[in-house]
Image 1 (cartoon, one colour):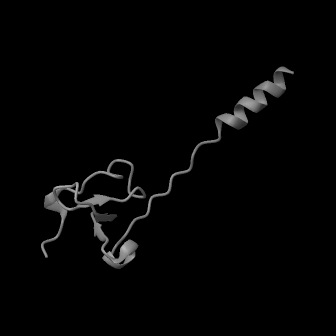
Image 2 (cartoon, rainbow, N blue to C red):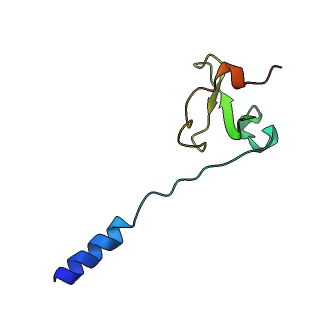
Length: 77
């Protein structure tokens, strides 16, 4: 019985939510709605709630995902 419980704990302990990070190189790779920008290798999309007008995608690196893109990082039009 102890071995079964230990084995179950090891198996469940190894189960973790897999994350997916999409790295972009061009704006064309960020085509959701046709207005995406590739900023610092992460896709970002228009968001009027951000000073820069863009928010990083949920698929960006966890350190920036769903955060506003800094104004200094958005290319001038």
